[in-house]
Length: 298
Length: 326
Image (tube, rainbow over all chains, first blue to last red; front, side, top):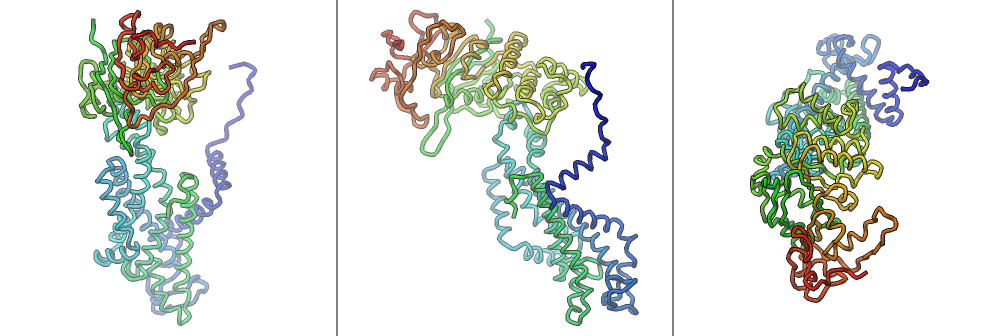
């Protein structure tokens, strides 16, 4: 180095650089920023639910049944005298508690299937993909309804069924990437280097095939929140008095005609906001991670 | 005399395509001695790359035999070939697509050592540094991902990978054709040094005659999957026998500006490699073709008046009419 070289400007500290990076992303994709902000708010709400909710969400109180929103019960109380605000706050815990495991189950099943069928090709691929097509013929809500009704309405069953039903989405995305990579030069170069098949699949192909699937996770989480709320609304999912938004809307629906609107409207709004936030986050993520596939996901 | 590192006998590779069969490599035989560099030249689609991949068993040949280091690997499974892969390596045309974008240069180089040597991780690290320096990649570059390296640096990583296991055979598939001219010279210098240093036999696939002159001990010219001429490098540049080779050589600018230039510009259609015609494939473009050239496929035989190692496939060699008049 030359003696005349100027001293380098002091590098900004790590938090400053991260903040600058995030601001850059937010400027490029306001959708992503708004979605992320909504989800972050729900996440904080879920994590701190026991501390920020004013009441026990499942404490019935016969003396305070169907109170309208007022000081001390900002969202009113429901037909059991439970505090709607506390129940809405705790509902976010259930929303995440369903969405995240559903996405994980979907990835755990879908990604290996996509990897394997894309690599194998031939009849195995045909059979699996036609099976997925057959599954797609039914609207997912009908299938979920049928399977959950048969398996029993527990949280675990809802998560497993929704995760399995959603796995074809990831399988297809991964399979398409694997198909494109399989004939590519760096896979050939990995073969020429003497890599065993499992190493080619997991070390070389998989990390390069996950992009599309990862970009879809937020959108699929929104789907999971929506469907699980629908199941609860229809009475086959999570059962009241569990503070789950779908179940709460179902309870509140009865009171809509008699004018006690707050029982259904507040959990409904929370549900809409959460699905909206996840979808915005998902769209933003797809644009960011996978610009090519912008329009491909349904 | 030591047995050849690589022996290829009557190798053919056919691909089924809609409407027929594409013959990419057609009855090719050659052998490659230890330390020898064979230049494989021909235009795009002449089957050079397919031949290179068949030799390394990256694809299975349709007919013929491939004998590497005394093993007839023609029918071996991939799992069985894997044990020999330390001894036979490949450098690809486009280094950008040949490197896993999610591995650093260091882990890409260490991968070869991890797969084929008993070295500990510390030893692998040291060896990767040494290999990096050998291909003139400073160790700071080794922690970068392929996307953060230039094309030339990427190709240096590929070359470091190819020499990491001290292979007996390296197939180089147009290793410089995707690089800028300024970078190309550096890579060619490096390859020429490594050729002396490692003693590996090289199959050097190219369509650049200048590269060939620098690298090759022997040259094989392919046209539509067939070998049309084979000779020591100096011989083929000075006295090309096959009309196609003559045309090819005339396209090469000699370094001497006062040299007489005789350009042979070819006209006529190249036959489709799908459902090939009988006879000499070059006859449709050959300025000295006779009617019988379209009927009989010429065998590869010694060129009259040349050394026995100079062989060409042209019927007109018998009457001396194979020279394109200038």
